[in-house]
Length: 545
Image (cartoon, rainbow, N blue to C red; front, side):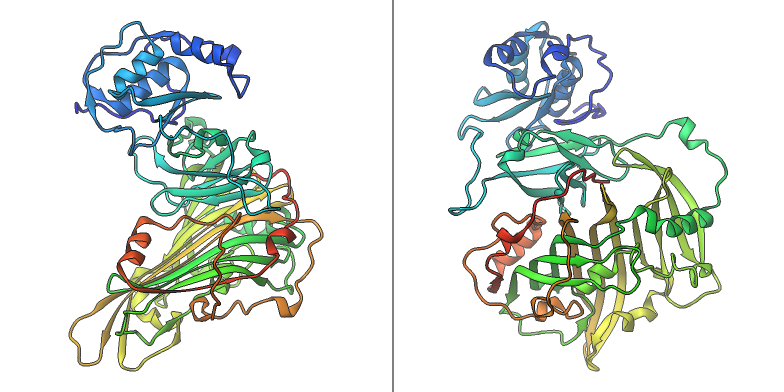
């Protein structure tokens, strides 16, 4: 491949239409979501021209996108997008141009809104939706991968959901996502957003049922926005904390949330647990009301071959995930009583979901030696809402922090923390901002007595809020709730053959699939009957940030 810079993607935004192609009736036809067969044929018969120099399938399709105003959607495992080609496309019909670039006429093409879907002819993309058991609503299964349009690297923890119905999820570390939406909502556009990237709105039909790659373009801040007044970053943080009661949900809400945690020893999974919870979340202005958690469904995979167990318990569980809601439980870098131990600096101006925000870094003052946090916090420039944060235990003082994370210690084990990092982001609905996603990763090395070698030990936890409800919210009966402080992997479960149903989850990474297939696992599951039917309608005016 010539050193040609990738300027687009299968689903990237329009660039300068520098190749002078026609707009293919875009002004007239793109107003409608569904095109007639005649309209689609007219579009595919329009003639196009692109440069004839050596390039890749990926870049050639992007050149067609620039020329026509249509975006291409495809699975990069089916379409060999890295293949080097030298197209000879001069005044060719669009359909012929696409097939020449693909080098394969076994693909089918379908026009959906502003997208041209490329897919294998067998099986055809289904218009029908998957049906749940009798009496349940029909759902549309949507899956795909979200990538950087320039580097094509996966974007972990990007948010995807329906802006008007409070339904969504996040990508996993491989950039993959899996989302279920009621079939009645299939004409609503999905919103996809990621910190520092242009947001995208796509019809679900483009993504269902194929596994489609979605490319997001990095966003660039204008010179006028970069050249701003000299701000005091510490004052901005204090004002953001003061405005939490105004910006965040002022009344209790219900969350439906997917939670997972895992433990990896010596590059082998000890256990991997997943659950769907119903969470009673107090208002952000309340200082006395507590979270309540009701387990709906769960399963746990345990490595029964692992005989060399590590009898150490690290702090974790749902409580640790909910404690990462930094707008509700203020960490020391936001707490007025301890904020003075930190130095704050303005790093950058970034975009989040189409909004402009300050990126402010924080780190403990040099004379303080106890292990504190360092990282960045994202604050909306207009309303000073806290949009998210990424932070870690300061690596300079990490060695002395081991006891901070232990529930139970084995005197025969020496434990050394290697890195402890967290991330959190928030979303917005008509009631205000609320928790959207948290992730924690703890990396250690351990050595047994009389052993000379240290072995790796990694534990993680992750929670994503997939549904938010604000009507008729009441605390759960005590008998319905579970202890949030317990290590979730210690909970006993009963086997249940039916599983996730219509609940949204975080798709497991390929590494987890591979690991669970290579070890002998014991699977324990639980399902609380009737919970699906109890979920009230979703709230309106939900906006992912």
